[in-house]
Amino acid sequence: MGTGPNAPSSEAESRILWGAHADVAMTRLETDLMHPALLGAVRNVLALLEDDPGRVELRRHRFQNGLWAVAVSGDGQDWVLLWEPSEERLHEVVIRYLGPPPGA
Image (cartoon, rainbow, N blue to C red; front, side, top):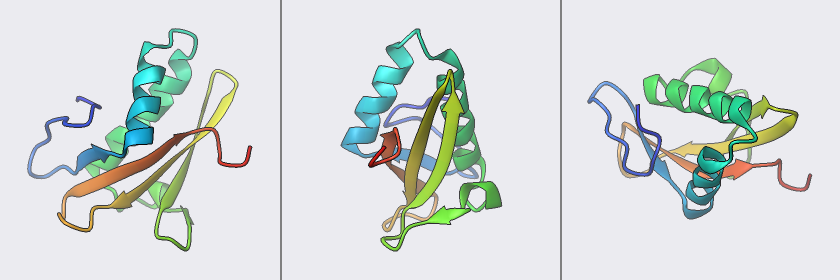
């Protein structure tokens, strides 16, 4: 499973697309050897999103602007992944933010 902006996926899976900020944050996390547990937790959430973005654990917190928030923790770090279904394509989700909770 690729996690980059153009990661391949099968027709049955959702495709992950990346907003600019989230893509930079993921690239930094992938190259940061100090937070392997956080990287693993983020990859687990991405795998769930690819498998089925309708899962209840991915849709517990929603903002008024339509973004869904998923808390991700590891290595003493608490992050949030903000995502939304693509408006253009049925089987795509867009990661809009990845990092510490805004305002934290």
